[in-house]
Image (tube, rainbow, N blue to C red; front, side, top):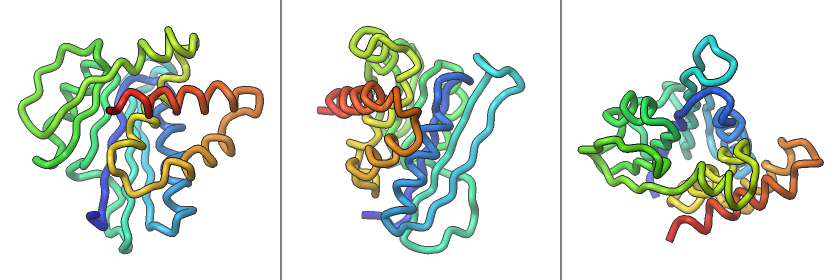
Length: 175
């Protein structure tokens, strides 16, 4: 596996993607990797643009921001439109199936992320954990069991069960 792996999570504020990136970064750090995590969001608390990035490497990281993503996750059409060109030719674009974006580079897969959070979990705020479950099945250099451990460490105790359930549903979406 490549010793340097870049992931960009994008959507809108309030979808919890920054929390997902923090969990992923903490899990990779626990496994002894070099990690950077960064985030950017619009001035709106909810609904504005949101981006979170994680770089995972076996070597020290010389630049902390994603240059060309190995994985791009897009939960909104505007996020897909904005970031679809900043991915490696061999990269993966993972996006919510409600998006009607046109993709011309990389490999791309559509998943019912938001629908799963609404219908299976009955809680739209869990879309971030569904997303993290999808990502965990895409050959990232972090063990899914470690990610679960850090989900439990980060989410409020009274939401642990529903967040792990959402993560597992996300994993099951990837065939």
